[in-house]
Length: 132
Image (cartoon, rainbow, N blue to C red; front, side, top):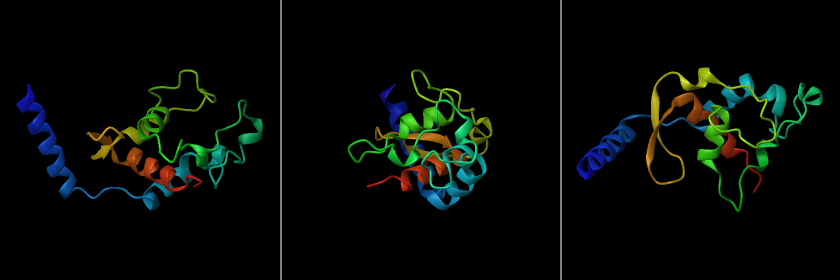
């Protein structure tokens, strides 16, 4: 079992070397097409549809806690996996972001996890707009 884990990690590391990782610029387009209507162009929850939503959309510039961006949590909320107890449980799931090629992404635990490229790009964008 340990050998399998080592081989899997080596395979993911090899993929990381050959796959271009998405950046915040790629994620900005996905954000503008899917999120800005509610969360606003700035990510502060002030989109054109926000006034009619209860609870109000989250301020996505304030996701980092103690200067740490919660990658795993953010990805699970976007893909609909975990919204238990969250304000905005009515946020739609973005299944189309789960399609396509995957990229190896460290979600915060040091382990590279195969993640759909559009989802990883959106996460990179959200990480880039955090208020310092």
